[in-house]
Image (tube, rainbow, N blue to C red; front, side):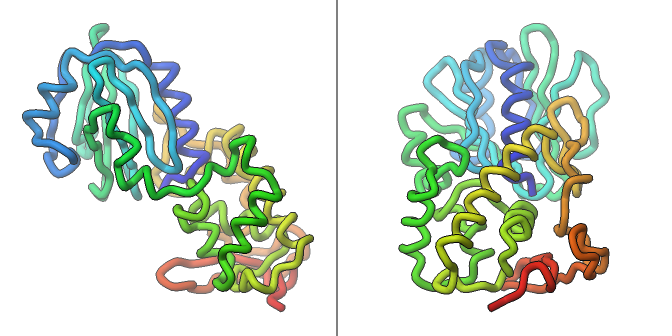
Length: 277
């Protein structure tokens, strides 16, 4: 699933390619992708509108239109947004097509079909559950070390990796970057938050502030089918230390990376560098 760095990369690409463009036609090939209204109403309200702005909130994209409506897009596991030139061949997994005045197109592709595009009145965006229940953005200036410490104090118990992935706790961090942040901090994914020292919390915070911007700089991680709006893979995979590297040597101590299950999700870590206390 695309996480904060991937969705931020897609957002930046959309700003460069489709912002201020007028939508003259919408094709819906799979109705289940559309939420919040009927397919007919979606087409009627989106056609003729101009894209005024694109923002990211956690793993969601928010596209604001000129007619007081907005689209909330969640790519889930395999969603893609691809900017295409006129008459570009459609992917067999292309489910929604936005056609602009200059004949360029934006394709929503989704192999697993878990993602969605939700149409919402602009003044109702703050009440959309998928956005209202989200935690703070970890790259905002007001996300300080003291603020992070206060957040953890409210979580009196619980394993640190699922907490980092809890979107109501912090917005945008998923499986991949939680693994990388904890390796950076030398913290075992099963550590209970109640056992973390001030220094360890600081290291986790530093990992968040170091790894997420680095992944954005390299345009995300293409560990599955993630691509940017130009259809290009992200460049962060060579910098990944533990995620998806089960059995491979730790880049620091050469101990084989291990993988365990925490609930329904996996966690990758070095058993030597990330000792559980």
